[in-house]
Image 1 (tube, rainbow, N blue to C red):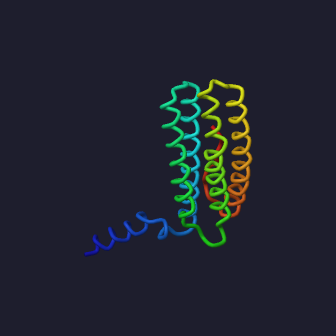
Image 2: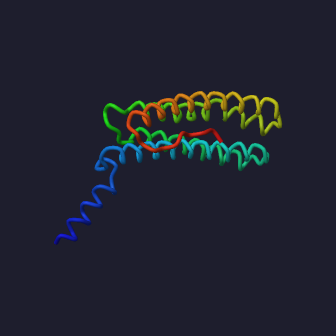
Image 3: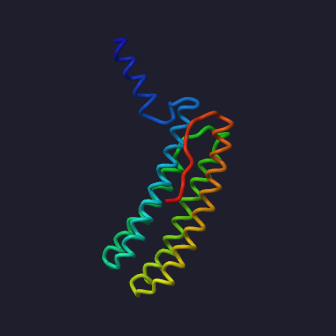
Length: 162
């Protein structure tokens, strides 16, 4: 009976973010948010690679996957469990996901057309614009994360654009 209680306790604490207390839960939440931001950056990288290759089918496919990734990441970041007084890191993560979603809807769809039309100058100009915007949002996120790390004495890493 005691073993069953221990198993239930472990499942409760490690099977759900809501049960993980204190610094461990905060660290896991920050890592989850960072993982979703990385997923968006990976989808962006794959889309840009498809544009560089010039294969129209692959460009459309990667743009679709990029769009789906941003939506999924936005939902996951928004659902991340954080203490009430520490929601600013989630809000900064949501800002990044929303920015990616907007960029996919506007800038990247237009860039895909430029890539297909072999207008590399226009395509790269849009990529630079998007990169600059994402870097600004990442800087804001990392500033919030730095404050959180110092205040709560947790160990987690900033997210860098790649």
